[in-house]
Image 1 (cartoon, rainbow, N blue to C red):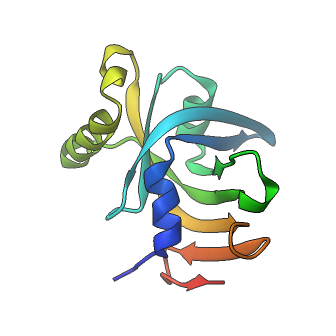
Image 2 (tube, helix red, strand yellow):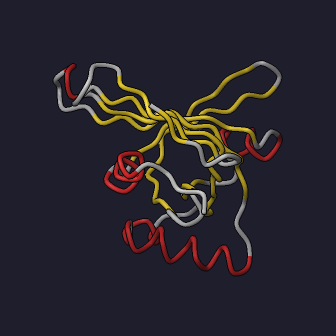
Length: 148
């Protein structure tokens, strides 16, 4: 089984906002979205309208990257995730799972237009200043490897 360090999982589960980035024709774009986390699939789920630039870019180039930051105002306690993944539009049984996961966390989002999207994580790097300044943890989908 491809397991991820519990410290990384904790950030994905406790935070709610991600920034993700796209690039088309060497033109980068970033978007900030509420997200939910599917631990067994190591994927992030968010809602956005199809016509937005970040979704249009992601449909053309599904290789995306992003970040999740935990900051309480103290440099010594910064924690954060940098990730790369594959963007997709969930369908059928996956869509049902994604929908249940996302709306359980953000029921208010049902009132807003948009579709649900998924980022299947490929690599994750976590920085954690709370124990050792600039401590790094890494996870990779292919190897399941996590290192310090």
